[in-house]
Length: 602
Image 1: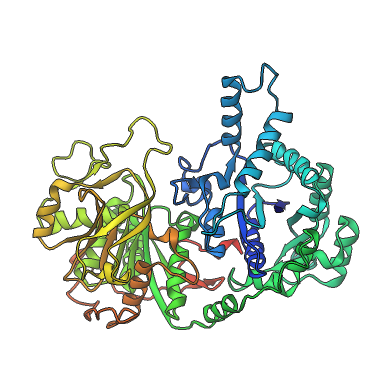
Image 2: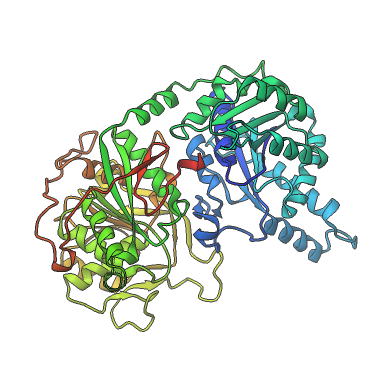
């Protein structure tokens, strides 16, 4: 087994995850089998209980692992399926060591950070690296390891020590270290400054790790004299100093590495030059060019709770992007804070209220993503109501599906107090209820998690056609509330159609409004399985519906009806002039000013 370690210095958020993913992609393009491991030095055992404001999106794997969002990057770039053990945390390591100590496995020895914690880290890496993640038998050829945080963080020290020991244990021909570091350009002098990187590398070497390659994050390409200076002071060959400058979108990063022959330097360090082929990135290059040339815009209103932090919805944004590029459209995301759509905002901040409604009404499609808690719920309900009444394409995910059901019960069935027991445990009309097997005392890993099967109950439904008329699908879940099965018949009589259910027939997985051109809610999270070359069918359907007033689903699926998004007339409280908000472009994805979407931190 060969190992590539990616570390970061100077500041966090440089894009280590994208760099690690790109290295994995380019090695895979050389004909090698690749797996990935992410090390997060925090004490949490997993990311499941962490707020999106703290840590960004919680990514969910097939086995139900709640992990760091970088594992989503690995899966998307490499088209692999990782396990919960591919995300190592300090909490997991200490928990495993303490469990061994309690069993008496250490035979009465004093348990210490060195050697017991460091040995546990190395054993975990070696064990997980052998797990096949690409659908083939046997271990991969190369394992790409990303160490979270920055060099010098106190919580990273046990991992640094363990990885230093590990590099000596596996030998120089089996270990390659890529250090990602910032080379800032001070506007006062207008030239790149190498001192931060020099200090970062010096600290790394002092901790027992020597970089083979230096990946320099900078706004523009590095000059040769700056590279020479870095080579001299950092003791890294000139040919192994890479420039990771700003690019239109992150799909350029593997191509950037290939152009600088990063693969040759890595393969040389791993003694694989005679084994690996030249990287074949034709398909990736073609897709990147399509991405760059898209000029016809599709506008999607993202109505959510965490619109101030785009990382909270990273996989949703990626899935929208994959579907948009596949349809040759430029994605424009309008961030709509759900709370700003509510009447209370109209009284407290009329301008924010007006802006939110204008963004919603100017969009070609509406998406309500997953979430927890009751903040902004009324705004999400209003967004779902607007999309339903005005024939705007709508996709509700997890909580978004529950919102659609609650809105329909209130507006169509006249059950004005219909809600979820998550928002009102004492409600007399519970449209959404707590799962019977859920835990109300423990938060971590107690939800319905991971890949679960959904069976299509209606063969000619839009969802079934988008998935290719299969009888069932496997998608990833993360929820603890579900549609009340006792209200299903009442809702279906009123016009809703629950077209997908679990194997018991009691859990509602997919809901559609047959009379609407595209109005779909799903209990699962389809965004987690979307890939650049394989967009999620439901996101493809949303983008297709939002792109054209009349369309056909590809591969000969049935034609859906046309609609007029501007009728019937708006309600009085929505009666503000519609407008197209001016957008700023960030790395190929357009967004309004309410939230910033930096595509992969580049």
